[in-house]
Image 1 (cartoon, rainbow, N blue to C red):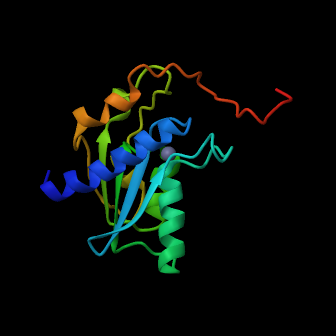
Image 2 (spheres, rainbow, N blue to C red):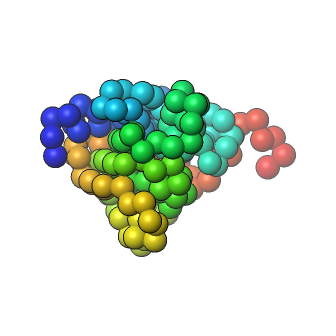
Length: 162
Ligand SMILES: [Zn+2]
């Protein structure tokens, strides 16, 4: 763990807090390009009514758009929590070279689904394997989850028929 990793992780944690302020689960991600900050993204699942709008997915899309290409092999992603299988696949698909995360899945409160398969294991199924580092600023990543009592599936207020 380096001071540099901690610097970018703090930015991801700020995005996680923003997501919570905006009514979403507290997840955030930032992407660097050639060592410099490229995009900062918060989880937008509820805000966008899109189950795929995890912070990492939004960060990958935004980074591809900014760089105008689908290859992110000169990028790193800093995620406030260990990426889920969906985001992990997108990370591998885009060739992100390095993945740094704060909390491990098992650190999350019980309202989140448990997963046995970790990003590091998923990476073994891909030819392109990013470096994966977990547990960066783990203690600082926990507070946004304190007191969180949201149901497993949050229905956006504008889905009136449910
Ligand atoms: Zn995800």
